[in-house]
Length: 574
Image (cartoon, rainbow, N blue to C red; front, side):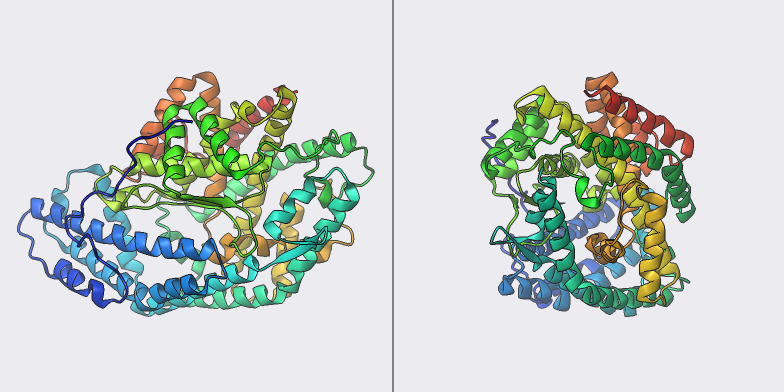
């Protein structure tokens, strides 16, 4: 393991006090008023003022992020929950209004056209759109939605089942779906879904509430539906809803048939007349689930070693986070589901959260989040906080490319080449599955918000129709339809961040293109990767992809080319 002797420290603040404690709006109000009222006489003063605004944004954002982290690491911590809710209820509304006023002041500045850095152009176009769609009455609705997101986390974070007389979280139970004992797989699969079904109506009603509030936000801003509003709110300047539909169709035509071919081969290799959903994770050769690590500490050390084998800079970043206790990785009861890399804009050292069961899938999750972390480190030196706030199409390119770079170096986790090959094949199968699952959920969300007054039955029926379109025709769901039609409820993005999902598929396609480049010329690919990530969000998405040596393309022809390479790689693995 590398040891980084000098751990990062946040830079000395130039505007806000070093000992600032944020508890109420009054703690920030004097700085807010000064920033809004400051007289600016020339372009140099304008740029210095923008740096002060950026510092304010970084500090308040980081404060919120630590509050969020403390609730997700322990959903039963009422003090942490109250601390987060206090921010949402007493600070977020004021901060949103302040942000809008700052944006208007920036856009009204006579020195706006004198800003030379190309990154300002990206920043300004986003500000213009944000000001255009901002409505004061929507601030309170957004606040209410944040509280509903916390409710979703509380509901799902409290789900558990009993296996072998031991109560475990659903995030821990998934390991049993890899068991070579088919009866165990079936039992646990049904237990998981029975437990989820207990809260089906609660989660249905929660989403109803969210849809109504989001639709109101859209109509307040003059939009006919929330989808169109959210595309603008997400600053999607580089593609449209129609591009998403083009991509959905490409996935259905190019990728779904390949998936069916692979799943049919699984069915034959397992010797099953009927392949059920609990047969999709088990090793096709009847081997027990791979155990790449025996402890969280070993898991961390091996991930650092794996990252080092790709590039020592990558491994050293994870080492820094480990030494600073910026990792919370083990699955446990009372912990929120999912995983994330939380950027810390002031100090520049991100925090990784996940639910590791020490399975092979955890390696993929960890290297994914490590990609986000490396991106955060590389973009941190940029001048303004907004320059570091990359769109998801770029952020996920960083993380998914890292997964694939690391895949060729998994020997640190496995005893032999046979185990590594098996894990690699499953990883590629998972990548192919990403395209269809993302297309399904993205299509689902388009329909939800184009038809906001739908019933629960209509919602499930439409989701079922998408499963027929993007799902496998090989897997038999007879007598399990009651579970299948509600599987969308486990996709937290639907509740947390609507329409933030298609980015995964776009970025996954880009990541496969990066892997193709990596296989041809590792040094060049890594150089291009770093150059692209250092740009943060100072260029359009297409330009950042071009800097990485790849294309930002949704066409069926491009999908077929890139996925054809991936299928060839899959077939080469023995």
